[in-house]
Length: 91
Image (cartoon, rainbow, N blue to C red; front, side, top):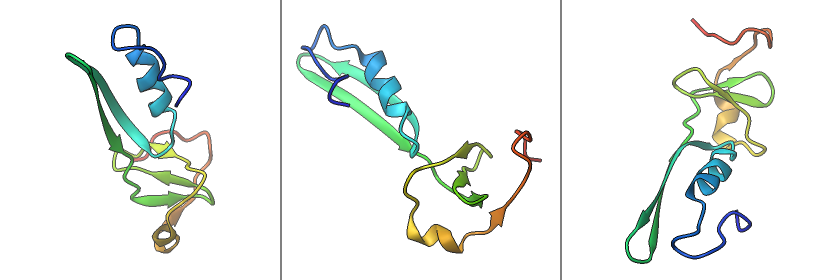
């Protein structure tokens, strides 16, 4: 993140900061806004895992797949489902 947060209040690329944060697997949504005169407001909504998907993935409540490098220990007790990787929609 430090390479994205460079510059002052006016020349900071807030879209680049937002996209960098969205690249983190536990992040679901991000809002980045300049607050006059000298602040930056960053709101991060985290992914909420509801089931394990295969050996290393998770699904959020919308059925969207995400795969963090480190999974929380309690997730080991969650239900685990398998499906072909070509299947993108869960009914």
